[in-house]
Structures are given as C-alpha cells and as structure tokens.
Amino acid sequence: MDGRLGLTGGQMVSCLVQGAVLWLVFALLLRWLGPMGIYEGGLKVAIYLLAIPLTVPVVFQLEKLAKLRRDQVFTGMAVGTMAAILLDGLALGFFPRLYGETVEMWAGAGALILWGGGVGLALGWWRTTRG
Image 1: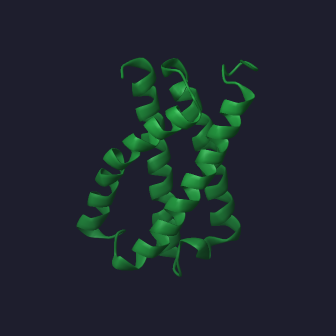
Image 2: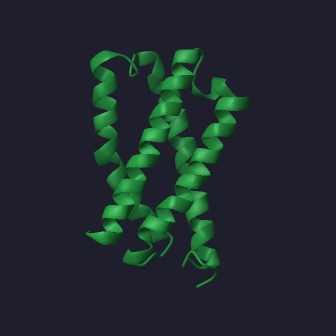
C-alpha cells in the first residue's frame, strides 16, 4: 500500500479513472434524458429514488475493478467521487451545455450528479462497515 489512504497506486488510478468515466456516462445520459422532463414533479422524485439502486452495482464494480478489499471500498468510492465531482464542477463552470440547453437542465443534471456521488459514498461506507 502507498500513502496514508491505504490504497496502492494502481487502485488509486483505477478509482480515479472509473469516477471520471462514470461521470461522463451519467452526464451524457442526463443530457439525453433532461428534455424528457426528468427534473420536474413526480419524475424528479422518481429519478432521485432510482439513483439509489442504480448506484449499488457501481460500488461493486469499483470494488472489483480496483481490486479493493472490503475495508478499502469507502476510500475507493471517495477517490472516484472526487474525480467525478471535480469534473462536474469544471463542466458546470466552463461547459454547461454538456448537460443541456437551459439553465434548468444544467442545475438539474449537476444536482443529480452530486446526489449520485453522495449515494455512492453512503453505499461505500455501508459496504465497508456492514456489507
């Protein structure tokens, strides 16, 4: 293991790359879904709730591909989420049209990506401590 985080260099790179790739996939997916009204009314509630079970396989994928032990999953999720949130901030600040054509779509996608990051961290914590 390298450093104080308890991850090897390879595990760190894997978590960073997975976080970046997943951010891009979900950013493009939200751009496609945004015009369908997913940020309004009942669909908004549904998409936020749906994000929870859809994030579960992401945690297991990160664990497997980065070759994490159970006690490393939360740290790995934190590293991947860091990459995703940094990219989300850059995209919102400099390339907001990645998320759609209106400010409402930018805000909706940015908020949902932050929500997904938080859900991923919560599930990573659960996996490390209980799962």
